Picture 1 (cartoon, rainbow, N blue to C red):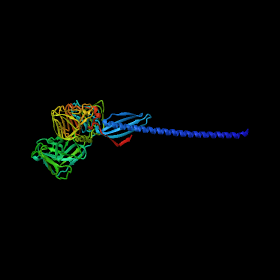
Picture 2 (cartoon, helix red, strand yellow):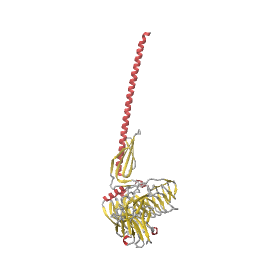
Picture 3 (cartoon, rainbow, N blue to C red):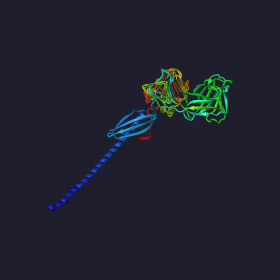
Picture 4 (tube, helix red, strand yellow):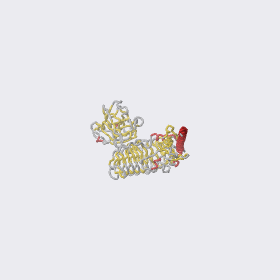
Length: 572
Protein backbone atom coordinates (compact mmCIF):
# COMPACT_ATOMS: atom_id res chain seq x y z
CA UNK A 1 0.00 0.00 0.00
CA UNK A 2 2.81 2.31 0.79
CA UNK A 3 4.26 1.78 -2.66
CA UNK A 4 1.40 3.71 -4.26
CA UNK A 5 1.98 6.92 -2.28
CA UNK A 6 4.62 8.56 -4.54
CA UNK A 7 2.29 8.26 -7.51
CA UNK A 8 -0.48 10.00 -5.58
CA UNK A 9 1.88 12.87 -4.67
CA UNK A 10 2.83 13.29 -8.30
CA UNK A 11 -0.82 13.52 -9.26
CA UNK A 12 -1.52 16.10 -6.62
CA UNK A 13 1.40 18.20 -7.75
CA UNK A 14 0.14 18.03 -11.32
CA UNK A 15 -3.32 19.10 -10.28
CA UNK A 16 -1.94 22.00 -8.23
CA UNK A 17 0.28 23.05 -11.11
CA UNK A 18 -2.64 22.97 -13.51
CA UNK A 19 -4.72 25.01 -11.14
CA UNK A 20 -1.96 27.59 -10.78
CA UNK A 21 -1.62 27.87 -14.53
CA UNK A 22 -5.37 28.26 -14.85
CA UNK A 23 -5.48 30.98 -12.21
CA UNK A 24 -2.63 32.82 -13.90
CA UNK A 25 -4.34 32.56 -17.26
CA UNK A 26 -7.57 33.83 -15.70
CA UNK A 27 -5.71 36.78 -14.15
CA UNK A 28 -4.11 37.58 -17.46
CA UNK A 29 -7.44 37.33 -19.28
CA UNK A 30 -9.14 39.48 -16.65
CA UNK A 31 -6.40 42.07 -16.83
CA UNK A 32 -6.53 42.16 -20.60
CA UNK A 33 -10.32 42.43 -20.51
CA UNK A 34 -10.15 45.23 -17.94
CA UNK A 35 -7.60 47.09 -20.02
CA UNK A 36 -9.73 46.66 -23.10
CA UNK A 37 -12.83 47.83 -21.27
CA UNK A 38 -10.98 50.79 -19.81
CA UNK A 39 -9.60 51.67 -23.22
CA UNK A 40 -13.12 51.47 -24.63
CA UNK A 41 -14.39 53.73 -21.84
CA UNK A 42 -11.60 56.22 -22.47
CA UNK A 43 -12.31 56.18 -26.18
CA UNK A 44 -16.01 56.72 -25.56
CA UNK A 45 -15.29 59.58 -23.14
CA UNK A 46 -12.95 61.22 -25.62
CA UNK A 47 -15.54 60.88 -28.35
CA UNK A 48 -18.21 62.38 -26.06
CA UNK A 49 -15.91 65.27 -25.12
CA UNK A 50 -15.13 65.91 -28.75
CA UNK A 51 -18.81 65.76 -29.70
CA UNK A 52 -19.86 68.28 -27.02
CA UNK A 53 -17.01 70.56 -28.08
CA UNK A 54 -18.18 70.67 -31.69
CA UNK A 55 -21.79 71.08 -30.58
CA UNK A 56 -20.78 74.12 -28.48
CA UNK A 57 -18.91 75.48 -31.52
CA UNK A 58 -22.07 75.05 -33.59
CA UNK A 59 -23.93 77.19 -31.00
CA UNK A 60 -21.31 79.95 -31.39
CA UNK A 61 -21.70 79.89 -35.18
CA UNK A 62 -25.49 79.98 -34.98
CA UNK A 63 -25.32 82.99 -32.63
CA UNK A 64 -23.06 84.87 -35.06
CA UNK A 65 -25.56 84.18 -37.83
CA UNK A 66 -28.48 85.42 -35.73
CA UNK A 67 -26.58 88.61 -34.80
CA UNK A 68 -26.52 89.58 -38.46
CA UNK A 69 -30.31 89.77 -38.46
CA UNK A 70 -30.92 91.23 -34.97
CA UNK A 71 -28.69 93.25 -32.61
CA UNK A 72 -29.96 91.48 -29.48
CA UNK A 73 -31.15 87.91 -30.24
CA UNK A 74 -32.91 86.23 -27.32
CA UNK A 75 -31.37 83.10 -25.70
CA UNK A 76 -31.95 79.94 -27.74
CA UNK A 77 -31.36 76.17 -27.61
CA UNK A 78 -30.23 73.63 -30.22
CA UNK A 79 -30.36 69.84 -30.44
CA UNK A 80 -27.28 68.59 -32.27
CA UNK A 81 -27.24 64.78 -32.58
CA UNK A 82 -28.80 64.37 -29.16
CA UNK A 83 -26.61 67.00 -27.50
CA UNK A 84 -28.44 69.93 -25.90
CA UNK A 85 -26.87 73.34 -26.61
CA UNK A 86 -27.88 76.47 -24.68
CA UNK A 87 -26.72 79.82 -26.11
CA UNK A 88 -26.86 83.25 -24.45
CA UNK A 89 -25.77 86.56 -25.97
CA UNK A 90 -24.80 89.48 -23.76
CA UNK A 91 -24.75 92.98 -25.25
CA UNK A 92 -22.67 95.94 -24.11
CA UNK A 93 -22.47 98.86 -26.52
CA UNK A 94 -21.10 97.61 -29.82
CA UNK A 95 -19.71 94.38 -28.34
CA UNK A 96 -21.50 91.06 -28.02
CA UNK A 97 -20.38 88.17 -25.81
CA UNK A 98 -21.62 84.71 -26.86
CA UNK A 99 -21.68 81.86 -24.32
CA UNK A 100 -22.51 78.39 -25.72
CA UNK A 101 -22.90 75.39 -23.40
CA UNK A 102 -23.29 71.85 -24.77
CA UNK A 103 -24.45 68.91 -22.60
CA UNK A 104 -24.74 65.24 -23.73
CA UNK A 105 -26.94 62.48 -22.24
CA UNK A 106 -24.17 61.38 -19.85
CA UNK A 107 -23.87 64.86 -18.36
CA UNK A 108 -20.65 65.73 -20.17
CA UNK A 109 -20.48 69.58 -20.51
CA UNK A 110 -18.35 71.86 -22.71
CA UNK A 111 -18.76 75.65 -22.54
CA UNK A 112 -17.24 78.07 -25.07
CA UNK A 113 -17.21 81.87 -25.17
CA UNK A 114 -16.51 84.33 -27.99
CA UNK A 115 -16.86 88.12 -28.31
CA UNK A 116 -17.77 89.94 -31.50
CA UNK A 117 -17.95 93.57 -32.60
CA UNK A 118 -21.29 94.70 -34.02
CA UNK A 119 -22.08 97.72 -36.16
CA UNK A 120 -25.27 98.15 -34.07
CA UNK A 121 -25.37 99.51 -30.53
CA UNK A 122 -27.19 97.48 -27.91
CA UNK A 123 -27.47 97.94 -24.20
CA UNK A 124 -29.88 98.93 -21.51
CA UNK A 125 -31.04 101.97 -19.61
CA UNK A 126 -31.49 100.39 -16.19
CA UNK A 127 -32.87 103.37 -14.27
CA UNK A 128 -35.76 105.77 -14.54
CA UNK A 129 -33.28 108.50 -13.59
CA UNK A 130 -29.51 108.18 -13.52
CA UNK A 131 -27.60 111.26 -12.39
CA UNK A 132 -23.89 112.03 -12.25
CA UNK A 133 -22.00 113.82 -9.51
CA UNK A 134 -24.29 116.82 -9.87
CA UNK A 135 -27.06 114.69 -8.41
CA UNK A 136 -30.87 114.81 -8.66
CA UNK A 137 -33.05 117.68 -7.42
CA UNK A 138 -36.81 117.10 -7.14
CA UNK A 139 -39.29 119.93 -6.59
CA UNK A 140 -42.80 119.71 -5.11
CA UNK A 141 -45.09 116.92 -6.30
CA UNK A 142 -42.53 115.37 -8.63
CA UNK A 143 -42.70 111.60 -9.00
CA UNK A 144 -40.40 108.89 -10.30
CA UNK A 145 -41.78 105.43 -10.98
CA UNK A 146 -38.74 103.18 -11.16
CA UNK A 147 -35.25 102.80 -9.68
CA UNK A 148 -32.92 105.78 -9.30
CA UNK A 149 -29.11 105.89 -9.16
CA UNK A 150 -27.03 109.02 -8.59
CA UNK A 151 -23.30 109.62 -8.16
CA UNK A 152 -24.25 112.81 -6.32
CA UNK A 153 -26.91 113.68 -3.76
CA UNK A 154 -30.66 113.18 -4.28
CA UNK A 155 -32.85 115.73 -2.56
CA UNK A 156 -36.31 117.20 -2.51
CA UNK A 157 -36.63 120.96 -2.23
CA UNK A 158 -39.57 120.77 0.18
CA UNK A 159 -38.60 119.45 3.64
CA UNK A 160 -42.25 118.96 4.62
CA UNK A 161 -45.14 117.07 3.01
CA UNK A 162 -45.94 116.60 0.22
CA UNK A 163 -42.41 115.42 -0.45
CA UNK A 164 -41.02 114.48 -3.84
CA UNK A 165 -41.65 110.77 -4.34
CA UNK A 166 -39.59 107.88 -5.71
CA UNK A 167 -41.36 104.55 -6.19
CA UNK A 168 -38.40 102.23 -6.50
CA UNK A 169 -34.95 101.48 -5.10
CA UNK A 170 -32.88 104.62 -4.52
CA UNK A 171 -29.08 104.61 -4.47
CA UNK A 172 -26.71 107.51 -3.78
CA UNK A 173 -23.05 106.73 -4.47
CA UNK A 174 -20.34 107.80 -2.05
CA UNK A 175 -19.02 111.31 -2.67
CA UNK A 176 -15.50 112.27 -3.66
CA UNK A 177 -13.34 114.02 -1.03
CA UNK A 178 -13.02 117.80 -1.12
CA UNK A 179 -9.47 118.72 -2.11
CA UNK A 180 -7.63 121.84 -3.17
CA UNK A 181 -7.61 122.41 -6.92
CA UNK A 182 -5.81 124.92 -9.18
CA UNK A 183 -4.79 128.15 -7.46
CA UNK A 184 -2.78 131.35 -7.82
CA UNK A 185 -2.33 132.56 -4.23
CA UNK A 186 0.53 135.03 -4.80
CA UNK A 187 -0.04 138.79 -4.60
CA UNK A 188 2.47 141.56 -5.27
CA UNK A 189 -0.11 144.23 -6.10
CA UNK A 190 -3.85 144.68 -6.58
CA UNK A 191 -6.08 145.91 -9.41
CA UNK A 192 -9.32 147.88 -9.45
CA UNK A 193 -12.36 146.19 -11.00
CA UNK A 194 -15.20 148.26 -12.54
CA UNK A 195 -13.68 151.61 -11.65
CA UNK A 196 -13.69 152.59 -15.35
CA UNK A 197 -15.40 151.55 -18.58
CA UNK A 198 -12.76 149.13 -19.91
CA UNK A 199 -12.74 146.83 -16.86
CA UNK A 200 -16.40 146.46 -15.90
CA UNK A 201 -15.81 142.72 -16.23
CA UNK A 202 -12.54 140.92 -15.50
CA UNK A 203 -11.63 137.27 -15.89
CA UNK A 204 -8.99 134.71 -14.93
CA UNK A 205 -8.49 131.42 -16.76
CA UNK A 206 -7.40 128.11 -15.23
CA UNK A 207 -7.12 124.41 -16.00
CA UNK A 208 -7.77 121.30 -13.94
CA UNK A 209 -5.80 118.04 -13.85
CA UNK A 210 -8.64 115.63 -12.96
CA UNK A 211 -12.28 115.33 -14.03
CA UNK A 212 -14.04 116.59 -10.92
CA UNK A 213 -16.90 118.92 -9.90
CA UNK A 214 -15.98 122.47 -8.91
CA UNK A 215 -17.17 123.01 -5.34
CA UNK A 216 -15.77 126.40 -4.34
CA UNK A 217 -13.98 129.47 -5.75
CA UNK A 218 -12.09 131.83 -3.41
CA UNK A 219 -11.04 135.34 -4.48
CA UNK A 220 -8.80 137.72 -2.55
CA UNK A 221 -11.00 140.84 -2.87
CA UNK A 222 -12.47 143.83 -1.07
CA UNK A 223 -15.02 146.52 -1.87
CA UNK A 224 -14.60 150.23 -1.78
CA UNK A 225 -17.67 152.02 -0.37
CA UNK A 226 -21.10 150.86 -1.61
CA UNK A 227 -21.20 148.99 -4.89
CA UNK A 228 -23.84 150.05 -7.45
CA UNK A 229 -25.28 146.53 -7.53
CA UNK A 230 -24.67 142.85 -6.82
CA UNK A 231 -21.84 141.46 -8.95
CA UNK A 232 -21.93 137.92 -10.38
CA UNK A 233 -19.34 135.18 -10.32
CA UNK A 234 -19.50 133.26 -13.59
CA UNK A 235 -17.72 130.08 -14.67
CA UNK A 236 -17.56 129.88 -18.46
CA UNK A 237 -15.95 127.81 -21.18
CA UNK A 238 -13.11 129.13 -23.33
CA UNK A 239 -14.09 130.42 -26.77
CA UNK A 240 -11.31 128.46 -28.45
CA UNK A 241 -9.23 131.60 -28.97
CA UNK A 242 -8.03 132.21 -25.43
CA UNK A 243 -10.92 134.35 -24.15
CA UNK A 244 -14.13 133.72 -22.18
CA UNK A 245 -17.06 132.55 -24.29
CA UNK A 246 -20.73 133.33 -23.72
CA UNK A 247 -21.09 129.60 -22.98
CA UNK A 248 -21.83 129.85 -19.25
CA UNK A 249 -21.52 126.79 -17.01
CA UNK A 250 -22.83 128.35 -13.82
CA UNK A 251 -23.61 131.79 -12.35
CA UNK A 252 -23.71 132.85 -8.71
CA UNK A 253 -24.94 136.28 -7.56
CA UNK A 254 -22.75 137.82 -4.84
CA UNK A 255 -24.64 140.07 -2.40
CA UNK A 256 -22.62 143.29 -2.57
CA UNK A 257 -22.60 143.88 1.18
CA UNK A 258 -21.17 140.40 1.84
CA UNK A 259 -17.87 141.39 0.21
CA UNK A 260 -15.30 142.39 2.88
CA UNK A 261 -14.07 145.96 3.16
CA UNK A 262 -10.52 144.76 3.85
CA UNK A 263 -8.59 142.66 1.34
CA UNK A 264 -9.32 139.07 2.31
CA UNK A 265 -10.20 135.69 0.86
CA UNK A 266 -13.88 135.58 -0.08
CA UNK A 267 -15.52 132.18 -0.74
CA UNK A 268 -18.19 131.46 -3.34
CA UNK A 269 -19.51 127.92 -2.85
CA UNK A 270 -21.73 125.96 -5.22
CA UNK A 271 -24.43 123.58 -4.02
CA UNK A 272 -23.91 121.67 -7.28
CA UNK A 273 -20.79 122.70 -9.12
CA UNK A 274 -20.07 122.12 -12.80
CA UNK A 275 -18.05 119.11 -13.91
CA UNK A 276 -14.64 120.28 -15.07
CA UNK A 277 -12.67 118.15 -17.50
CA UNK A 278 -8.92 117.67 -17.43
CA UNK A 279 -7.01 119.77 -19.93
CA UNK A 280 -9.87 122.15 -20.77
CA UNK A 281 -9.59 125.89 -20.13
CA UNK A 282 -12.22 127.58 -17.94
CA UNK A 283 -12.73 131.20 -16.93
CA UNK A 284 -13.60 132.80 -13.58
CA UNK A 285 -15.47 136.00 -14.48
CA UNK A 286 -16.27 138.79 -12.03
CA UNK A 287 -19.22 140.51 -13.72
CA UNK A 288 -20.13 143.96 -12.34
CA UNK A 289 -23.36 145.85 -13.03
CA UNK A 290 -21.46 148.95 -14.16
CA UNK A 291 -18.41 151.11 -13.40
CA UNK A 292 -17.96 153.70 -10.70
CA UNK A 293 -14.68 155.43 -9.89
CA UNK A 294 -15.61 155.71 -6.21
CA UNK A 295 -17.53 152.46 -5.63
CA UNK A 296 -15.91 149.32 -6.97
CA UNK A 297 -13.93 146.13 -6.14
CA UNK A 298 -10.20 145.57 -5.57
CA UNK A 299 -8.78 142.15 -6.50
CA UNK A 300 -5.35 140.85 -5.44
CA UNK A 301 -2.95 140.39 -8.37
CA UNK A 302 0.39 138.83 -9.28
CA UNK A 303 2.17 140.85 -11.97
CA UNK A 304 4.66 138.05 -12.77
CA UNK A 305 3.60 136.61 -16.14
CA UNK A 306 5.17 133.28 -15.17
CA UNK A 307 3.39 133.12 -11.81
CA UNK A 308 0.59 130.83 -12.99
CA UNK A 309 1.47 128.91 -16.14
CA UNK A 310 -2.00 127.55 -16.90
CA UNK A 311 -3.94 130.80 -17.03
CA UNK A 312 -4.08 134.49 -17.77
CA UNK A 313 -6.03 137.59 -16.76
CA UNK A 314 -8.25 139.68 -19.07
CA UNK A 315 -10.64 142.64 -18.89
CA UNK A 316 -13.64 143.82 -20.93
CA UNK A 317 -16.15 146.64 -21.17
CA UNK A 318 -19.07 144.21 -20.84
CA UNK A 319 -18.90 140.42 -20.75
CA UNK A 320 -21.30 139.52 -23.56
CA UNK A 321 -20.88 142.42 -25.99
CA UNK A 322 -17.35 143.66 -25.31
CA UNK A 323 -14.00 142.36 -26.50
CA UNK A 324 -11.46 140.96 -24.05
CA UNK A 325 -8.07 142.58 -23.57
CA UNK A 326 -5.12 140.88 -21.83
CA UNK A 327 -3.70 142.01 -18.51
CA UNK A 328 -0.08 141.10 -17.78
CA UNK A 329 -0.21 138.76 -14.81
CA UNK A 330 -2.85 136.75 -12.91
CA UNK A 331 -5.58 137.49 -10.38
CA UNK A 332 -5.46 135.71 -7.03
CA UNK A 333 -7.77 132.71 -6.76
CA UNK A 334 -8.14 129.32 -5.13
CA UNK A 335 -10.39 126.40 -6.01
CA UNK A 336 -11.82 123.42 -4.21
CA UNK A 337 -12.99 120.35 -6.14
CA UNK A 338 -15.01 117.24 -5.24
CA UNK A 339 -18.48 116.64 -3.82
CA UNK A 340 -17.96 115.83 -0.16
CA UNK A 341 -20.46 113.59 1.65
CA UNK A 342 -23.50 112.73 -0.46
CA UNK A 343 -27.03 112.25 0.88
CA UNK A 344 -30.67 111.40 0.27
CA UNK A 345 -32.81 114.18 1.75
CA UNK A 346 -36.43 115.37 1.96
CA UNK A 347 -37.90 112.43 0.02
CA UNK A 348 -40.73 109.95 0.13
CA UNK A 349 -39.40 106.60 -1.05
CA UNK A 350 -41.27 103.37 -1.60
CA UNK A 351 -38.36 100.93 -1.59
CA UNK A 352 -34.86 100.61 -0.14
CA UNK A 353 -32.54 103.60 0.18
CA UNK A 354 -28.73 103.32 0.10
CA UNK A 355 -26.65 106.43 0.90
CA UNK A 356 -23.84 107.82 3.05
CA UNK A 357 -26.41 110.02 4.78
CA UNK A 358 -30.22 109.76 4.89
CA UNK A 359 -32.00 112.90 6.10
CA UNK A 360 -35.72 113.58 6.58
CA UNK A 361 -36.89 110.74 4.32
CA UNK A 362 -40.16 108.81 4.68
CA UNK A 363 -39.31 105.23 3.66
CA UNK A 364 -42.10 102.71 3.10
CA UNK A 365 -41.95 99.13 1.80
CA UNK A 366 -38.20 99.18 2.33
CA UNK A 367 -35.39 100.20 4.64
CA UNK A 368 -32.68 102.84 4.81
CA UNK A 369 -29.09 101.60 4.66
CA UNK A 370 -26.17 103.86 5.61
CA UNK A 371 -23.54 102.71 3.14
CA UNK A 372 -21.04 103.93 0.55
CA UNK A 373 -22.12 102.54 -2.84
CA UNK A 374 -19.65 102.81 -5.71
CA UNK A 375 -20.11 105.35 -8.47
CA UNK A 376 -21.90 103.86 -11.44
CA UNK A 377 -20.87 104.71 -15.01
CA UNK A 378 -23.39 106.10 -17.46
CA UNK A 379 -24.92 103.63 -19.94
CA UNK A 380 -23.15 105.29 -22.89
CA UNK A 381 -19.46 105.96 -23.43
CA UNK A 382 -17.87 108.88 -25.24
CA UNK A 383 -16.86 106.40 -27.94
CA UNK A 384 -20.50 105.37 -28.47
CA UNK A 385 -21.45 109.01 -29.07
CA UNK A 386 -18.45 109.58 -31.34
CA UNK A 387 -19.39 106.48 -33.35
CA UNK A 388 -22.90 107.88 -33.91
CA UNK A 389 -21.45 111.24 -34.90
CA UNK A 390 -19.17 109.54 -37.42
CA UNK A 391 -22.10 107.64 -38.90
CA UNK A 392 -24.09 110.87 -39.22
CA UNK A 393 -21.14 112.66 -40.82
CA UNK A 394 -20.65 109.84 -43.31
CA UNK A 395 -24.13 110.65 -44.67
CA UNK A 396 -23.01 114.15 -45.65
CA UNK A 397 -22.93 117.68 -44.19
CA UNK A 398 -25.43 120.51 -44.56
CA UNK A 399 -25.54 124.04 -43.10
CA UNK A 400 -27.70 124.84 -40.11
CA UNK A 401 -30.74 127.06 -40.20
CA UNK A 402 -34.50 127.19 -39.75
CA UNK A 403 -36.99 124.53 -40.84
CA UNK A 404 -40.71 125.29 -41.13
CA UNK A 405 -41.93 122.46 -43.44
CA UNK A 406 -42.09 118.66 -43.24
CA UNK A 407 -38.62 117.20 -43.84
CA UNK A 408 -36.81 113.85 -43.77
CA UNK A 409 -33.28 113.96 -42.33
CA UNK A 410 -30.39 111.58 -41.67
CA UNK A 411 -27.84 110.36 -41.59
CA UNK A 412 -26.52 113.92 -41.63
CA UNK A 413 -24.19 116.37 -39.87
CA UNK A 414 -25.65 119.88 -39.54
CA UNK A 415 -23.06 122.61 -39.09
CA UNK A 416 -24.60 125.29 -36.89
CA UNK A 417 -27.99 125.47 -35.16
CA UNK A 418 -31.16 123.59 -36.03
CA UNK A 419 -34.25 125.73 -35.37
CA UNK A 420 -37.69 124.16 -35.86
CA UNK A 421 -40.65 126.50 -36.22
CA UNK A 422 -44.38 126.23 -37.02
CA UNK A 423 -45.00 123.81 -39.86
CA UNK A 424 -41.89 121.73 -39.23
CA UNK A 425 -42.34 117.98 -39.02
CA UNK A 426 -39.08 116.01 -38.84
CA UNK A 427 -38.74 112.32 -39.69
CA UNK A 428 -35.36 110.72 -39.01
CA UNK A 429 -34.07 108.00 -41.31
CA UNK A 430 -30.60 107.99 -39.75
CA UNK A 431 -28.53 109.58 -37.00
CA UNK A 432 -28.57 113.39 -36.88
CA UNK A 433 -25.65 115.41 -35.43
CA UNK A 434 -26.02 119.16 -34.90
CA UNK A 435 -22.84 121.04 -34.00
CA UNK A 436 -24.79 123.95 -32.46
CA UNK A 437 -28.13 124.21 -30.61
CA UNK A 438 -31.38 122.38 -31.35
CA UNK A 439 -34.38 124.62 -30.65
CA UNK A 440 -38.04 123.69 -30.99
CA UNK A 441 -39.07 127.31 -31.44
CA UNK A 442 -42.86 126.83 -31.39
CA UNK A 443 -45.22 124.46 -29.55
CA UNK A 444 -46.46 121.22 -31.02
CA UNK A 445 -43.58 120.39 -33.39
CA UNK A 446 -43.28 116.62 -33.98
CA UNK A 447 -40.09 114.64 -34.49
CA UNK A 448 -40.28 110.91 -35.08
CA UNK A 449 -38.39 107.95 -36.52
CA UNK A 450 -39.23 106.41 -39.85
CA UNK A 451 -41.31 103.24 -39.49
CA UNK A 452 -38.43 101.25 -41.00
CA UNK A 453 -36.67 101.45 -37.62
CA UNK A 454 -39.10 98.84 -36.27
CA UNK A 455 -37.97 97.94 -32.75
CA UNK A 456 -34.79 99.99 -33.18
CA UNK A 457 -34.15 103.44 -31.75
CA UNK A 458 -32.70 106.59 -33.32
CA UNK A 459 -30.15 109.21 -32.30
CA UNK A 460 -30.40 113.02 -32.18
CA UNK A 461 -27.19 114.75 -30.96
CA UNK A 462 -26.38 118.40 -30.29
CA UNK A 463 -23.02 119.75 -29.20
CA UNK A 464 -24.88 122.82 -27.93
CA UNK A 465 -28.10 123.27 -25.96
CA UNK A 466 -31.41 121.51 -26.66
CA UNK A 467 -34.60 123.46 -25.89
CA UNK A 468 -38.00 121.88 -26.50
CA UNK A 469 -41.05 124.09 -26.18
CA UNK A 470 -44.42 122.99 -24.79
CA UNK A 471 -46.13 120.08 -26.51
CA UNK A 472 -43.15 119.07 -28.62
CA UNK A 473 -43.78 115.47 -29.56
CA UNK A 474 -40.66 113.27 -29.73
CA UNK A 475 -41.49 109.70 -30.65
CA UNK A 476 -40.02 106.47 -31.97
CA UNK A 477 -41.02 104.43 -35.00
CA UNK A 478 -44.44 103.58 -33.63
CA UNK A 479 -43.21 100.28 -32.17
CA UNK A 480 -43.40 100.29 -28.35
CA UNK A 481 -39.73 99.19 -28.17
CA UNK A 482 -38.57 102.13 -30.30
CA UNK A 483 -37.36 105.44 -28.83
CA UNK A 484 -35.56 108.60 -29.87
CA UNK A 485 -32.43 109.15 -27.79
CA UNK A 486 -31.83 112.91 -27.47
CA UNK A 487 -28.21 113.73 -26.50
CA UNK A 488 -26.51 116.99 -25.60
CA UNK A 489 -22.74 116.92 -25.11
CA UNK A 490 -22.80 120.40 -23.54
CA UNK A 491 -21.63 120.94 -19.95
CA UNK A 492 -23.92 123.81 -18.90
CA UNK A 493 -25.39 123.87 -15.39
CA UNK A 494 -26.99 127.24 -16.07
CA UNK A 495 -30.66 126.89 -15.09
CA UNK A 496 -31.71 129.54 -17.59
CA UNK A 497 -29.94 127.71 -20.40
CA UNK A 498 -29.21 124.08 -19.43
CA UNK A 499 -27.79 121.40 -21.67
CA UNK A 500 -31.33 120.03 -22.19
CA UNK A 501 -34.63 121.72 -21.37
CA UNK A 502 -37.39 119.13 -21.78
CA UNK A 503 -40.89 120.54 -21.71
CA UNK A 504 -44.43 119.15 -21.84
CA UNK A 505 -45.90 116.12 -23.60
CA UNK A 506 -42.80 114.27 -24.72
CA UNK A 507 -43.89 110.70 -25.32
CA UNK A 508 -41.11 108.37 -26.47
CA UNK A 509 -37.95 110.34 -25.82
CA UNK A 510 -34.89 109.59 -23.73
CA UNK A 511 -32.76 112.53 -22.59
CA UNK A 512 -29.04 112.22 -22.04
CA UNK A 513 -26.50 114.89 -20.96
CA UNK A 514 -23.65 113.21 -19.12
CA UNK A 515 -21.69 116.48 -18.73
CA UNK A 516 -24.51 118.98 -18.25
CA UNK A 517 -27.89 119.71 -16.72
CA UNK A 518 -31.25 118.25 -17.75
CA UNK A 519 -34.34 120.17 -16.63
CA UNK A 520 -37.78 118.62 -16.89
CA UNK A 521 -40.32 121.40 -17.08
CA UNK A 522 -43.56 121.41 -15.06
CA UNK A 523 -45.86 118.60 -16.11
CA UNK A 524 -43.37 116.78 -18.33
CA UNK A 525 -43.77 112.99 -18.58
CA UNK A 526 -40.71 111.01 -19.68
CA UNK A 527 -39.58 107.39 -19.92
CA UNK A 528 -36.05 107.90 -18.56
CA UNK A 529 -33.56 110.70 -17.99
CA UNK A 530 -29.79 110.66 -17.63
CA UNK A 531 -27.72 113.72 -16.81
CA UNK A 532 -24.78 115.00 -14.82
CA UNK A 533 -27.32 117.09 -12.89
CA UNK A 534 -31.05 116.39 -13.24
CA UNK A 535 -33.72 118.85 -12.06
CA UNK A 536 -37.37 117.79 -12.01
CA UNK A 537 -39.57 120.85 -11.76
CA UNK A 538 -42.96 120.80 -10.00
CA UNK A 539 -45.43 118.06 -11.03
CA UNK A 540 -43.07 116.53 -13.60
CA UNK A 541 -42.90 112.73 -13.73
CA UNK A 542 -40.67 109.94 -14.99
CA UNK A 543 -42.23 106.53 -15.55
CA UNK A 544 -39.69 103.87 -16.43
CA UNK A 545 -40.44 101.77 -19.52
CA UNK A 546 -39.27 98.14 -19.23
CA UNK A 547 -38.59 98.09 -22.97
CA UNK A 548 -35.50 100.18 -22.26
CA UNK A 549 -33.74 97.07 -20.97
CA UNK A 550 -33.46 95.90 -24.59
CA UNK A 551 -32.63 99.26 -26.13
CA UNK A 552 -30.75 99.09 -29.43
CA UNK A 553 -29.72 101.39 -32.27
CA UNK A 554 -29.37 99.79 -35.71
CA UNK A 555 -26.39 100.67 -37.88
CA UNK A 556 -28.58 101.86 -40.74
CA UNK A 557 -28.07 98.97 -43.16
CA UNK A 558 -30.44 96.11 -43.97
CA UNK A 559 -28.37 93.85 -41.71
CA UNK A 560 -25.71 94.31 -39.07
CA UNK A 561 -21.99 93.76 -39.60
CA UNK A 562 -20.48 91.26 -37.18
CA UNK A 563 -16.74 90.86 -36.67
CA UNK A 564 -15.71 87.97 -34.38
CA UNK A 565 -12.76 88.80 -32.14
CA UNK A 566 -10.53 85.67 -32.26
CA UNK A 567 -8.40 86.70 -29.29
CA UNK A 568 -11.52 86.50 -27.10
CA UNK A 569 -12.25 82.80 -27.82
CA UNK A 570 -11.96 80.67 -24.70
CA UNK A 571 -13.29 77.56 -23.04
CA UNK A 572 -14.89 78.19 -19.67
